[in-house]
Amino acid sequence: MNPYCLRELINKLKEAILDERRTAVLYACLSDMSESFQGVDAFAEARRDELDHAATLTRIVEKLTGRTPREATQPVEVEPIRDYCSGVRAAICGERDAIREYTELIELSRSRKLDRILEGIRADEEVHYAKFRKLYDTECVKPCVPCPSQDPWMSYASHIPYDGYS
Ligand SMILES: [Fe+2]
Ligand SMILES: [Fe+2]
Image (cartoon, rainbow, N blue to C red; front, top):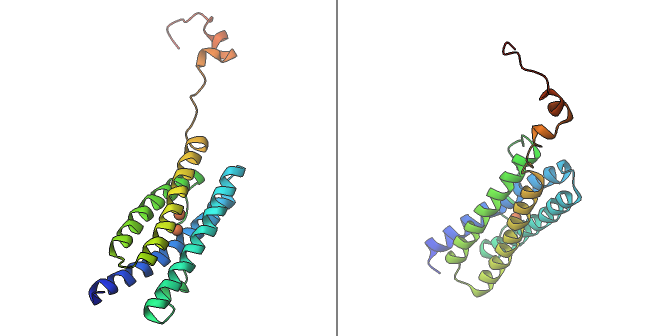
């Protein structure tokens, strides 16, 4: 493989390790914040997947370079989450970006074996993306506000003569 392409592949794999580890931290927070079983379960499961992805990518970089990359052990931080639903939105955007990044990595890869591993990770990210979209629709999209005329006070108030001054 062209040394320039190999270096680019290794650098992108290292970035992906950090992204996976950051995402795992975010999902641990969202799993704790969720008030539904579906939310707790979806984020806990995705967190385990992201940690598996980070471990798999670390083994690949170790094979290619002969050493453990710093990205596998350096401390990671995530942006604080304002509220659960903005966290779910961030998760959806992150998964969409991850799908694009793994597609780019597959294009850079010159090995069938590596292609298959990266395609497996991308398939997991597609499952996460779909699950979080569904979660957002069921938990974060507000239902219609009830019609005011069905409010007992409002139907009573509608019978009060309006004097035009208040
Ligand atoms: Fe991942
Ligand atoms: Fe994911």
